[in-house]
Image (cartoon, rainbow, N blue to C red; front, side):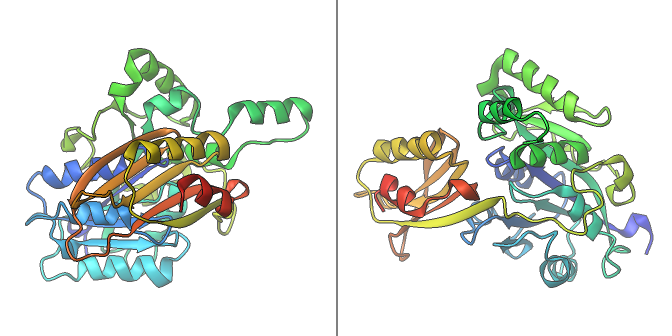
Length: 344
């Protein structure tokens, strides 16, 4: 099979809450005449992002073309999960023209690129490009690390130690692997924030690459699809902190799922989530909540202390049971304390 016959795959990576799902929704709504398939890899067992995307399914990307892989890093489960899933997408009655992979916010993209050399699929697909999203406001403020001040204090106390945080390594690996960087939430960052974020990204990038800004996931698909990067053949130009390692682990992070009863005060929930970020260094909260007197379920998405919520669809016959996925570095996960703050 020639390169021209290979199905192009776009890998969309980026830190927790950078806006990957919002971007993919925009691509689904503007497919440029292509029939898409989506593979969503989430950190945790509750498939919030996949559920959001399935609600946007249409003729160009039907529900059967949207596949979730939850509670497992796809680059760590190549034989068991990733390869069979890609093969199933390629075997659909109507073959997709383009596959989009949304990695988890904790994923390291380079091990995933290596998986595309797997004999079962390497002659059938090619990595069209790696798109890394960076939350411009957060990057400008240094919030891709849980506490820059704490890291600096540790280094100052013992200069012989490198206390680089796992979060910064994830960020740097994603930047180093990318063909294009999208600075998301440009409207929140402002011109000064965008300039500061651009400077941070340029300092981390091992080679000159385009850095574009966007808001609400809106960008011309022609800018990020059809790159023909063949990234699987260009690994040497994409350095990683984990080069030379046979594998990588996500033991630095932990995820818990909190069941919530029906709530009556949305503002109180927002305040509680902000407390988790401020007091317990929680990185990400996402999920659904039932609100008394409201037939629609409340979609909640939080990055640090920044919380967004909206009613997305009716509960219908589903139990009105709220569930929130909470993600943090493992030494910051105190289940009892999290439950107490959320009133679970």
